Image (cartoon, rainbow over all chains, first blue to last red; front, side, top):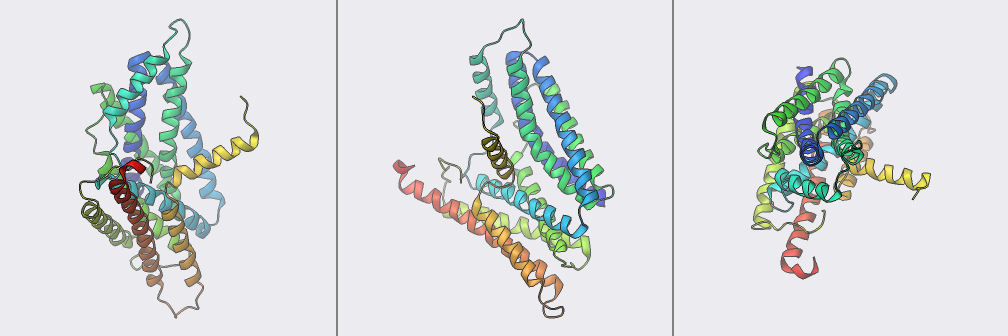
Length: 251
Length: 86
């Protein structure tokens, strides 16, 4: 059970982020060749592995348990609220849905405009791929470390979830060589956002000394509460802003 | 152009905060909820049942989310009624 609690949200959350990173790496590979972007992506993954190893293990081993639960719970809560809020606004049509096809076309056009010097190593392709994988992967690293905070095998479980997501996205991408636009990113983001909020409320309150009835079993009603409230907010937004109105700036 | 260590640190701090927060209202609301529950947790034992504190945190967090989403809805409605100001 603890393995599943850490691995499943890590898998789903990482899947969303790796799909977004894959779109950029694919655009670079198709327009400029594959060697540099694959090396850039591999370098970024190595950087992320070091970050997870250093911060994950040191945080778990060094900080007092209650303080750690409070800090990690608070960060998970903020991060989860960010995801679920964005997913709610996307469902309601107030923020654009993430369009992998559109992002791919835009990246390809930008990269073609920058040209290529075939005789040299393609540093533009390497750095663009490294940056994309690192930026998307930082959220993965955060999720893995936070979900691994329960101690014991939790860090290993969340890392396995993230690696499994990387393998699934890599295999699917290698097979179809097109943006993975059919992945229901917003639905995944909505559910992971609710999961992260759930862990955030549970751990932060435990860090403050609150004892939940049934201990970890309390996670389920909290999760259902977040899903129910969030879905009610989507319904309300659809009636309050009929037909949606995509905001011209970030909200 | 070389960036000063201070501006580099500021950019790094903005990136880290941006990783976790994209709307100040929901973040401040969630932090206020945590501070409130931390305060209530100091009340002498027996005055407040422990599970109630968890429920208080959940409700306050939901209120922060509601406020943030309502703000976005208001912005969307304003852009609908005054599209040229967007």
